[in-house]
Length: 386
Ligand code: ADP
Ligand code: MG
Image 1: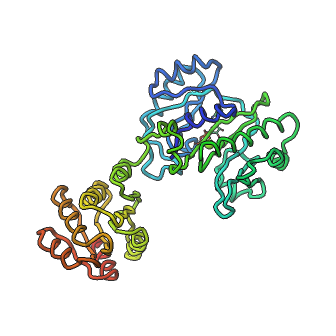
Image 2: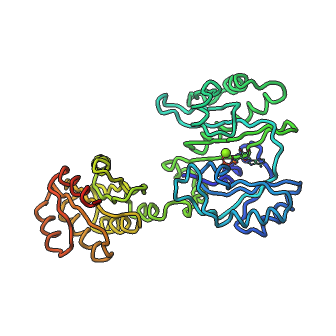
Image 3: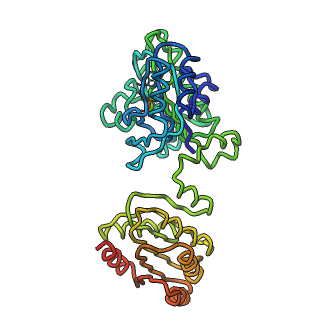
């Protein structure tokens, strides 16, 4: 589960990692007032969306008077922010964080994630901050330092010092950096995170150490242990179709293509996406209705696919095992009665009760294109595009 920068910064503060003075708002006038309260002569107005790369997309701007802060906030609030991480659709900005602008001497990268290949958490840092970790890994891999954590022992003080020295940090800052690393791991561990990233962590002209940006991702499977963290979720940031799908326990992920798919079983769904690619098209979604799908779930799945305006055709690929073909067919027919089907639908149905399923579809009076095999389905999807 992702949270916003301002929420992540509150959590960093709780773990004694310093952050700039600032406050969040959804109102431009209020943004000006916050600047006055913070004091100083320069402020940063930062779009609060769940994606990073906001600076590059125009979502992080400085202003030099409280009036200018209010105007800048007015421009950012409500804008559709497109960053390298939002995808081409972008995200509408509903809140901004107003912060004191600091005079930055140097930017660093620090983060903690789980290294699956080593089955342990790993702390990562670099003296080259500001850039994304992917870019860092591509441009200067030798400037990245890592320490893997033995979960039984926890992150050790010598490991923190190891990282600090490898980064070429000396003098008064050693203690500050070591402290940040130790607290970062304590936060990561205590709150069951899958990612904590401070990029950039900065040293100011006055040699203070602060987190200028923060990103935290919690392990959703561990949220039951942290009731208070659930309240930090911002459902407005989730794709509305994905949110609806989750309510009906459907495994739906929206993609950028134009052929909607409805499949049972994740493996078959992956194969179906390949099939669509082979046909020269691109999938509009991943949707695994699962083995235990009810008529109601199938109906909802169909409605969700059709609600995506990019969808120009639908491929239904069902192998009836636990989910019987007749149950599935009833769901599709029911959905078709409720929502107007404005695109061609190719159905490939096989397995348990397939005859009954095909009969239900045939007698529904609805216009389905029936495919008899995967190869046939590919061909029909190809023609659908023509
Ligand atoms: P993103 O990673 O989404 O682009 P950041 O919060 O990292 O957003 O902001 C982008 C850049 O803006 C930072 O790398 C930093 O150089 C600058 N910046 C952000 N917050 C402040 C601040 N409070 N004071 C000064 N500079 C800032
Ligand atoms: Mg950043």
